Image (cartoon, rainbow, N blue to C red; front, side, top):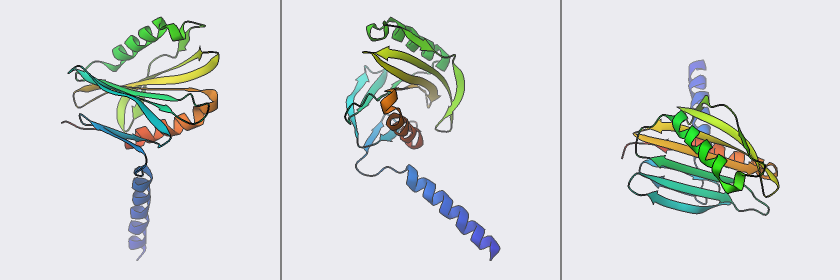
Length: 177
């Protein structure tokens, strides 16, 4: 009887975790080229387009009043070392006009786990239109793709942006097409 109660408790825990990670119908559902995830309903897709035949670009922004959160997912249909990709993103961001005043500061690239997969990350801080912004770039290889994920938010919108990024991670999938 004790063993049956333990099995039931483990089953209940696993079921509750699975249901918690399952998005409701009003969430943004994304599935293309074997990459899938979801975002909360109060986010809006601002771009969802192929990058030639070589990849894809997806971007969404938080839509509540005074929201600053942006999440971007891009991939190339090739295996490239994640640290090389992050360094390239950092170089491009340093050159972008929006980050010129007062500049942008990055942390060192560090190994992390994203959606149960080995990944690499660099965080950053900057000012955009006088608002302090923080973000991170995560890059990983999955099923022949090199996937980059960006999350950027002002301090007032950080909690909602972090919650959306966590949902993206909990629902993230990558499979061979």
